[in-house]
Image (cartoon, rainbow, N blue to C red):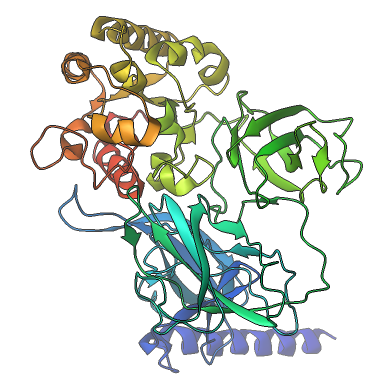
Length: 540
């Protein structure tokens, strides 16, 4: 028996020696391999897939966000996270964010290939929307199908064209001169329930979509025409769809959630219900007896939660359409969920406090539910988003004890006062008093307050987007407030990077609505902050 174990040990060590030699000397030339991958999609879920090297291995996937290069002089790849997988594939985000992935194969004794070249996803650079829902001959649609696609960065609205046959020319920015049946621009999210009941004789139609800006100018091109097989006997979808298609995986949601959906055709009244456990009936018509919160809304496809949701756990939400008597049209939607996992034991490194510029959202139609419009998404360190849309500097101050103190971050990024700038009757000194009081509260609780200077405004764009006027003294107020901020010990000066070429107003190329920076603007904010990491206090 002793001899058996001895020889087994010898064989085992010999095998380990062979594996070590193969990997360290690279007998198979594995380090010459540059792993390439492509994104394949199934039911709206994209997966990065690659070919396995000719050697047993597992894989390390490093995720990066590419910067704009505006601040540092050239784009760089900021590392976000590292994951491991035993299979040559991993699920990736479909959000229109400049995510890049590097894949490294590992053996028993470490890496056996060099990291791959950065591999982009197609969603940020797409020239046209990419369809999510496809209706094939095997899986046809009803005469009122939901047409859904991946979001295009900075799109304000979308135009869908229905055709009897493929267009005369694919792509482009013009409606097809042939085979055109109808089109609509009244689509303010990345999906639409079409009404095709006026085409009962067709067995198959085609559809395509393009993104538009504030003035209905094209953003990119029409998507490739997608066949739309019809089943005239199929029942119509009778519930809205929670719009979670392009959410960013494994990123913290804002403290104040926003619930967004794809509406039913022609219906304007909706109710959202929030629960802390699944409902008694999944697709019923009545409110759940255990619901924690609910709110109704008219003529929009998003609801902003007025309450913070700081408690760890899984939250569930759903939406239903209502008629004028507040009765359910159809049924409740499918159930959506989000997880709150704010650290409860270890102290937070950083949090961001402020108004809608911090909360997120941009290009008018994109709410903070879409994290590509939040600057905290692009920071290369964990930073909880404590922003709340609609805040003035004073209402931000008022919720310090409720929203900041329980989390007790080591560093607090503070950007609030933009709504106070544009509001008549609020003075620069009042904004400064609010900021100074915030600073005192932070220092009293060992929180480092790091101010961001206020951004310039674009009153003409604000008027077009929100039909509201801006205080004519906004620029003078901003100058006074920012001068005070620049006298404080900890601040990040973001203002100079956001002007138009004439140095007068917020650059329209960075903000569609004249108030909230869009995706590139939010990326730039994160890059300026990251240039000042020396201001942050480290955790013990």
